[in-house]
Image 1 (cartoon, helix red, strand yellow):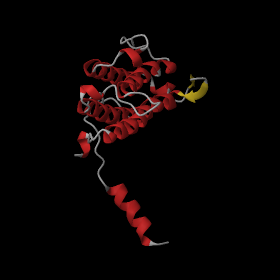
Image 2: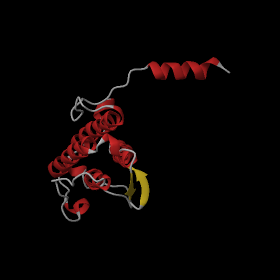
Image 3: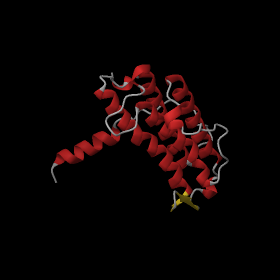
Length: 179
């Protein structure tokens, strides 16, 4: 075996990982809950920074045939609110307006819903009893562990973060954390 792949692996494993501030990461969070909340914190931090970096006038921009900037942010917020109850946790007090992707388009309204949705998603992770994490539930018609459903919430935000980074770059907006 060549030493380079091993050296790269050791270097990457030893490198420090920057995670978003511990907001929403209660001291009682351990194990998988701590990991899911860390992912939600990171996605929230970057998505909020990126939303703030987009000029108001660009919230209606989209590549042909795709969601607009505001629609992507609202889609993430909606899923943060709609998915956790699939695990049996109480529904969010924050309700998405009807046809939110088309009706919530201002920067202030988008940021408000996005922030509230992440607070709810993190509270939902904490509300799910550890003993139920491996229990099966239905995720959009597919059987999945409740842990897997909560992980899907976290990965979903990061999936659309990548999309929004591409939107930003096309519009000459540099993501704030990479400046």
